[in-house]
Image 1 (cartoon, rainbow, N blue to C red):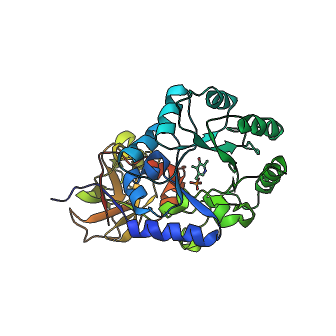
Image 2: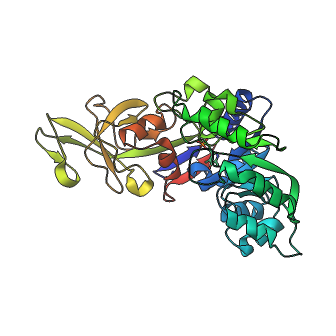
Image 3: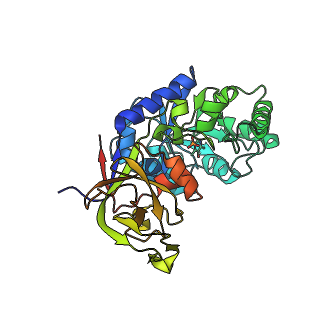
Length: 359
Ligand SMILES: *Cc1c(COP(=O)(O)O)cnc(C)c1O
């Protein structure tokens, strides 16, 4: 018995995309970003498939601890660092590398217990995103302080995050780079700037370490272009099946709110996928869906468990036929666009009700 709604994760494609990141940034080491359950793909399966990444990056302590518990021994970087002494203690005992982005975290390290194992540190600079990180003017003083902190494994490493790298004509990226480099003049230590958009679009940002996220999952980080253009292969295919077909009459209103009214007599298919599975509720009429490998369009509102599609072009379709919502043959980027969101959100949002498998 095969589950109806499924997400298949193509581990070969995942490894291919890691190789693409390496090839795009030759000479840089790769911190594979697997936060948020590896963008919804399953953190552990992704970490195992990408065992030759130079490090893994996660947002939170809980994510890192579950990787360690599962036996992942590679270097793991906590991108948001730690919040209190208990977290610092747990992180140090599990040999996690910490990002320090706030004065409170510096104080935690300075006041760490004698018994704490020393930790590796990435110091985060705010080069213009204005979210996390130390201001450039604070850097010399912070670096000086950290030199005297006993619980830090030298040398320090330095990172910053790009705010607008997905827009290739936006001057912000180069400005951020200049701010970062100027702030670190005369300071030794490895550097990391680039996310996926930096890796693929801004070679000046490659530095010593790159931090690919979305590109590993086979999605272009740029607005208005395709993953194939960057040699990336889609990793997750979300699929389901037709559970009903009905011949609706001209004037019939479909689904909640009756927002779609059939402009003519129409064959309508009902697909077992909805916002309860993570399919975006705001996907508009016209959003592409593949039925039997061929494009049809969504019509009417997305329900919790179902969507309706226009099968006018497939009169021979029948109950049980396969449907792809995104992935193989249909880019998540395109679906995201039709739902006024970004592919990151679609991938992260696939619900636990969906059955995952890998190939
Ligand atoms: C999420 C994240 C990344 C990866 O970004 P993508 O756009 O998915 O490549 C890189 N660095 C940091 C600090 C992040 O939080």
